[in-house]
Image (cartoon, rainbow, N blue to C red; front, side, top):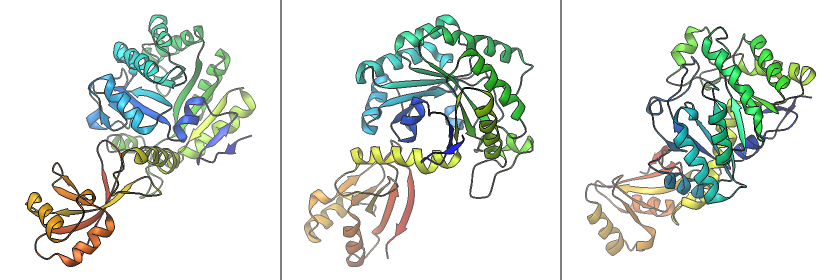
Length: 361
């Protein structure tokens, strides 16, 4: 039976272990390279990640220690290794998996996404020996006549030589139900455990291609593609009757309203300074003052306005003094001149993206 989960998604059977941790915000997103042997029209990868770069969540990574720091800030219980295709930089990917396992123990669950093009027995053996727990294949399903697709399908069979969880992960592309059924049947015949299906979404980098294929967004407020969710549900209904796989239809709402929020909440508890409020959405809310002479303003606030120094933080990188919201409200009413006061909310992530700014009169 297709049932709705508490995470705004749909499931047949059981959620894969990687998904269980992910929806609770407990998985570090480890992006080991933007390099990929394919060029899928629906790829949402941003321009800054299309090169050979490494990120742990939003944090640019120079070495494995950076990823460990990010995992600790998140209180992560596992990692999802993604790209690009992580196998395009196998040495790096193997090293990061091994080091994460050494740092957090064998119970730290790691799953990985790959096209399958580079999934030779030798490459898979190295991933397995490093400690990979779960592998998900995303072949060039919607270009079935290509030689690359034939190679990917052959290589997927190699994964069943190892004692880990094997599954598939594909987008729900409207009008491609028969191709998705074929892949589900193929995986089922090999003895795979699951097929994850993602609601198709547009981004700045794939919107033109998606429109050229004749697809359109659900609405002006949503990044989801019209008809994708319904196509995914049809696959789940078919798969329940015709295969023994578990299925998870991961919606656009799950990613934004559930998974991201849960991850932000976990991080906010670890990175919030005493003057910051952690909101229900996991953002950090506090007051700021902006002024050309930060040192002079700091002296004014402490010595003349009587604000305790421990309530203030001079953020020179962003050119502001941070403080509790209530303090900013009071100071905005009391201090005249060119000092500008705001209440802001920002993500507790490495890049501290600002999501809201309210000027105080």
